[in-house]
Length: 107
Length: 490
Image 1 (cartoon, rainbow over the protein chains, first blue to last red):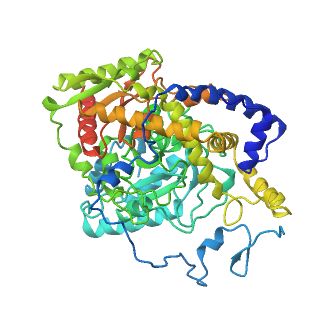
Image 2 (cartoon, chains in turn cyan, red):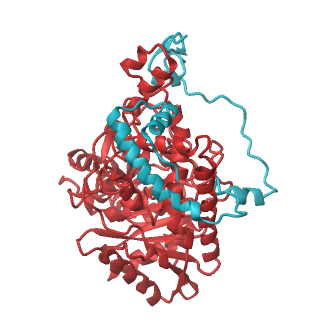
Image 3 (tube, rainbow over the protein chains, first blue to last red):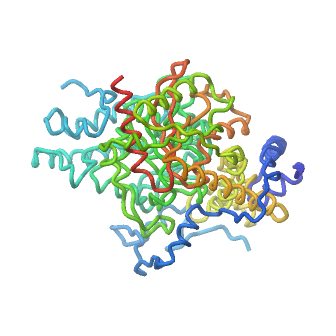
């Protein structure tokens, strides 16, 4: 079984773009170790020749070979403001500038 | 006029009959529900939309005055105030997912299910509390505070659709929508004594559901009666071109199914031994076994079945769900919507920007994102994510085998009744294990219903779980409604 060290917790948190305090690192390391030692029961299960189930309706859709792929019209249905016609999607943005999403300069 | 007691209404049909008799108008009913909801102390709602609701209710008044009768055939949810779990996006109405990440998010569009309910005459009173990003089974993981159990304030209502179940039970909305990834509709329905359905994967469009784990998530109804859930299902189900996972099949007729008695003599009810283990509390076991005896008394045949791989279901789930979550929640980066903290706005490196923005996630979300990122990371992916998907296939095969022998499978929803707020806090694994009876249906993509079957020895509600083969919702509604009628008569 994988041993969860504080360094591994930090490394994985970094991959997930989460910054943890030292208290969180300590707490999560213990909890992850506990959860992993539980889920490790699956290692003992014999899965020889078992296809992984990624998506529940995969076999149904594969069996229905007559089915045509679903196409819909290539039509823009972007919600816009009644007042000025600007895209509503910008209203939820933390910062916008001249009709674009604005972010801090990072290069 | 005396204020309406919203807790007295047991079904949509009863409300429509009262509209027909002119007992009250939709706006009077809606005001009564709003008052009950806003005066409530359960913390079931995060956001109220009283203006939208009253506007829709007043418009319904005009229709009723003109037509004299509820236009049921074209508007099956005419004048019905609902509640929506706060992970369903609603145009212009704040949608938080119970997270600081989306504290001020006003989506530019509405979920397909929301539009379909509105087109059927319903409207929303507001957005219901939940576990943050639907991650939890007790509704204690909300950035807006825990929801209380509707009859026992020291208890949890279950989660993650805790607000959805508590509000319906307390008469704060007629019915509600929840979402179920590992039991998040059925568990709170069971704890709060209401009916809840997780439909077959692909039955209901998820366009506009903020994704947690995409191979498991499914939207479903919670209501005070089996038939109310059927009314909502008939409106919501059906293919949606905006959701590529929604199945291209005919809509079910769940209301008709409720009114049709099951073929009891031909009905084989599977009883999985794995669902009656030592972890069951005596009160839960007693109530569920009584329900099974009732089925037998109607002429159904009880057949022992075995789902041996369901003992691995929790382990599989907490690898698959967190892996998918770590991918789905990568979209919360502070660029186009969601939290961008003052620190993020000052960041000079991209990584700092992301990390500051994502500091808005609560502890359970962080824990699951780290676990999911681990399960998908190089060197561990085959041993964890891929292996979990293989064992998931075995869990699904167990059901396929069982459904060759039986028509439906019955058992408890949860091993115990609602536990105390704080009782399992700080121990994530214990809380995860509470989902062991609901997760198997999600892993296999099957429909499953929770129907109240009485109270445990502690006076708290117990839920009976009915699981069927893929797309067997009509059968579940037929059996569930018959059971409910039988129970109300005794």
